[in-house]
Length: 473
Image 1 (spheres, rainbow, N blue to C red):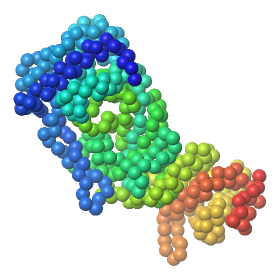
Image 2 (cartoon, rainbow, N blue to C red):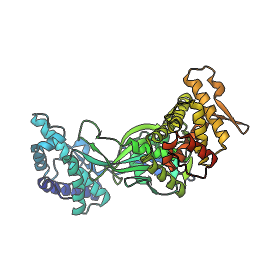
Image 3 (cartoon, helix red, strand yellow):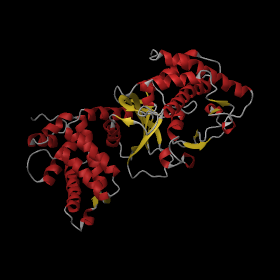
Image 4 (cartoon, rainbow, N blue to C red):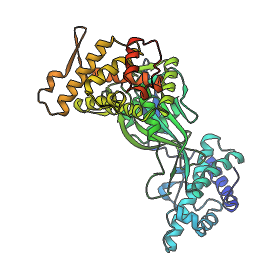
C-alpha cells in the first residue's frame, strides 16, 4: 500500500526514529519506565478449558517515557523535544481534513487547533515508535516503521474503515482449531494473545468474572462491516452490523446440540488500519456487550458443557449454509429457537418454541391447528427416525395444550406444565425445544419439504413410507 501523504510521512519518519532512539537510550541508562496500569495474563488451570486471568505488573509502556513540558511527572523526555515535532504539528494543523479528524475542524480557535494537532502528532509518533520497540526492538527497521505508519495514515484519511468481527461463543467448544462456515465466516480457537486483548476492556477480569472466562472459540466474520472511528469524542459508529450472521451460527449450534450457548462480548479487529494497541497483543477492540446468551448457562462454569467433534463441526457448517438459503418460515423457526433460550420466563419460552413449530408446520390451509401440527410433525419426524409417529403426535398435542392455556389466560395452565413420557415426567417446554430442534434438522436437510407441508397426500406418504422422498406438488 503506497503512502498517500508523502509530506506527512517525510515529517513523521525522523520524529518516529528519534523517539525510538530516546526509548533505547532510556533503557540503556536504566531509567525508570512506567508500566501499563493493568495488563492481563492468561492463566490456564489443569483440567479446565476456559481461561482465567490475572494482572501482571511491571509490563513496560515505552510511551510513558514522554510527557508534556519539562518535569512532567519526572519523565525523561518531552514530546516537544522529539526531532521535528513542531514542524510535523504545524503541517497537520494546516490540513483541513486532519484538523476535522482530530476534532478541531469546526473552530476558528488557533489555540485549539494547535493543541489538537499536537495531540494527534504525539499519537502518531508514539503508536509507531513504541510498537516498534515492543515488537522489533530498538534497532531501526524502516520497513516495519512504514507498515505501522500506513495503518495510522489510513485511520486519519479514510472515513469508512473496514473491520473484522470477533465474537466469542459461549459454553460450546470445538475439537477443531478452525471451522469454515463460508468464505467470510469461520469459527476459530481463541489464542492466548486474543484472550488478553479482548479482556482489557472487561472489568474486573482479575476476579474471573464468568463472562470473561466462558469461551474457547470465537465466530470471526471478515470483510462484512465498516466503522467510523473519530480521534476524539465518542466510540466507533457502525454503518451496519451483521447480527444475522452471528445469530445464524448460534442457531446452527442450537439445532445440532441441546446445550446452552450464545454470545455477549462483541469485538472488532481493524483491517489494514490502526487506532491503538497494547504492547505485543493483536489489535482487537471491545465494541459492546450484546447480552444474547442462553439464560440457563451456569455462572459457575469452568469448562465447556460440550466439545463438538470434527464431524459435528462439519454439521454446524452444513446447518449454517442451509440457514443462509432457508425458506423464510424455516428461518423464522430457527430464530424462535434462539430467542426461546434468551427468555428468563418459562411462559415466554414455550410461546417462542410453539411459534417456531407452527412457522414450519402450520402452512396456509385452514383446519384445527393442534391436530394439523400433530399429524404434520409426526410425518416430518419420520424422516429423522425419531419417536413413533403416534407418540410424536401426542407430544405435540400436549405441548400445544400447555401453550394454549398460557396464551388464553387459563389460570390452571400449571396442570399442563408436565408431560409424561415412558413413565417419567418432563417439562412441556423441554419437549417443545426437542421437537423444534428435530423438525428444523429435517427441514434444513430437505429444504423442498416446507413447500409441500400443506399437501395431505405428501404427509400421508411420509407417514406410510418414510424411506421415500416426498414427491407431491
